[in-house]
Image (cartoon, rainbow, N blue to C red; front, side, top):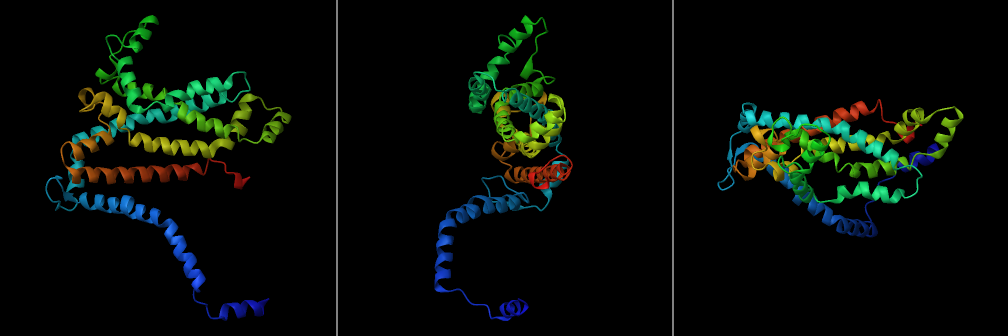
Amino acid sequence: MTDVATERSTAPRRGMTQADKKRLAVGLLFISPWIVGFFLFLLYPMASSFYYSLCRYPVLKPPEFIGLGNYARLIHDEYFWKALGNTAFMFIELPLMVVLGLSLALLLNQAVRGMPFFRTVFYLPAIVPIVASAMLWLWIYNPEYGLANVVLTKLHLPNLRWLVDPRTSKLSFIVMDTWAVGAGMIIYLASLQGVPEHLFEAAELDGAGAWHKLIHVILPSISPVVLFMVIMGMIGLFQYFTQAWIMTAPRGGPEYSTLFYALYLFQNGFEYFRMGYACAMAWILFAVILGATVLILKTSQRWVYYEESR
């Protein structure tokens, strides 16, 4: 065996044959749409965005290189910090959506008659376009005749001014987002149905009740899915834009209370024509999301249970 290995290692490397070159050319031809798309729609825009972040670029005039001027200016921009704070507030929603989505999935995972109907009903709001749901919730939150205050009146609770009050404007978005919890529910439900049945049987033999099954069987089994939902939810909250743009445009709610980071970035780029400034904000957002994702992945080693480690 040693002689064969030595012979193979010392043998001169054979060049590519005509057949190899043909297979390589066919392979490159098949992946060429992806290669073109990667350079044209990802790498080039990213490189351009980074260059413009170092420029004063009013869009209608050529960019002027100013180094780190945009980044230094952001430090003294009170609206930048306001937008960052408003976005950070929305992270209250992240654990709420995880708990609600998982709880709903656990309920809809029971073998009860008519369950497909209930699953459909809870999932339907998730497929409603964001624009349509935002218009609907604008009516619901109307302080004069909206459904939300009608319900509060029925419950003998004081009415709220919802989106027109800076104390409740961000809370209004959080309540509205729970309406579409079915999107996460359907993913949790799929993961719950993939939990091996023999784990439940082993837990029952050990005398485990419903709570202990949840803690020691279900949650560890679906923990990779929970990790995925946490990361995707975190990225979505950092980019919270459409609802705020439709419902509180153009400045982001009373006293800028719903001026979220993505909304302020959009305003700088496409309303104030400060594209270089907006690009600098985009790269800061990229760095923050990257750092938060790495931090979550680091901590996940303590609570995520992978199949390979069993």
